[in-house]
Amino acid sequence: MTSHIFGGPDTPKKLRCLQKYLQAFAIALRDQQFACVYIDAFAGSGSRTEVRPGIPLFGSELAEPEEVTTPGSARIAIEINPPMHSIVLIEQDSARFAQLQALKAEYPDRQIIPRQGDANELVQRLCRGMKWRGSEKIGRGVRGVIFLDPYGMEVSWATVKAIADTEALDCWYFFPLSGLYRNAPRDPTKLSSGKQASLDRVLGATDWRERWYDHKNTSRDMFEDADQAIRRADVDAIERYVKERLQTAFKGAVLDPVRLHHKNGPPLASLFFAVSNPSPPAVALATRMASHILSSGRSSQTRSR
Ligand SMILES: C[S@@+](CC[C@H](N)C(=O)[O-])C[C@H]1O[C@@H](n2cnc3c(N)ncnc32)[C@H](O)[C@@H]1O
Image 1: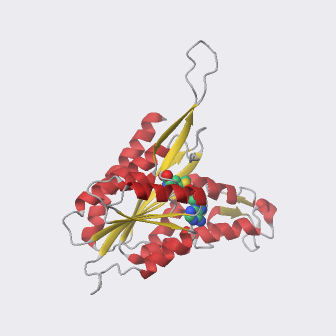
Image 2: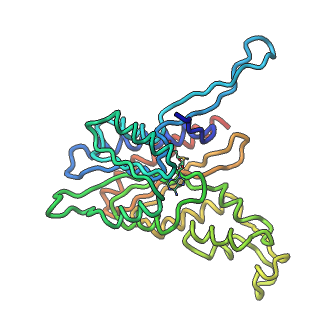
Image 3: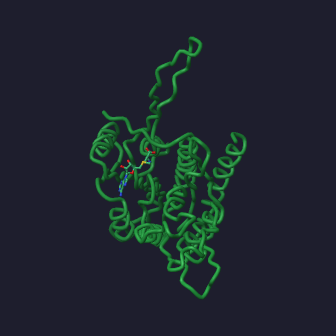
């Protein structure tokens, strides 16, 4: 089987946040009347392989790098106890999808639903088709957690909006800061129409053009008069903008994210947590559980930097 090599030094932190939240969520909802679902929209293969440099045991002699495999988000979710009622695993890549099917076969007593295809299409369909509040046929309502863990700018705003509109899902979103950076160069002459369209699709808005770019002559279109303009928004401002965008969709809450970094230091992504359910007790519970997890993620960041 092929190994799924992805992520960087902060990937274990991301997966720890997810694991801790799913554990707390499963315990908190154990005695409530809801069915609990976990949706892994970019599920990968079920495990993560990391290549670690070998330890030079004989002076400077180069040691072989070693491959270390640990559970990925799908296996982490399956192993939560008490178990979630249903686990939906979405993956586009055929080889990784086959690994998810093998993972399902390891747990014949569990309701694990692997789906191969585009996460945007499948998540939107699921969010709009599910009777979250319950129905005569299925009885109880459904509550859940969704994890958006793309490589880059794959998640469309329409997907984020469909999740928020369920008013039933808590969402962990690994938001691609470095993708935004790449698509919003400081020099707007490099901002191609393709890059602009990509940013519009991920952010679901067009006002980032005015919010992020400074231009001296405000009476002219900065994209026509490109040499007058420059991106003034730094990574903090971009992250704040993303939080504002999420707040327009999620009626419950959007917490300050934990920022994760590349191996050599620059920001890679921000791990956001958002609550779609507007009911005050649901918001209070989800916020209490997630803010504790996020703040321990932030303090481990300070210690290791
Ligand atoms: C960062 S990896 C996910 C890792 C996984 N969450 C884990 O912890 O093991 C991103 C995954 O998304 C898949 N992917 C990329 N674009 C996709 C799309 N549009 N729809 C569904 N899956 C996609 C990739 O094949 C890859 O396996």
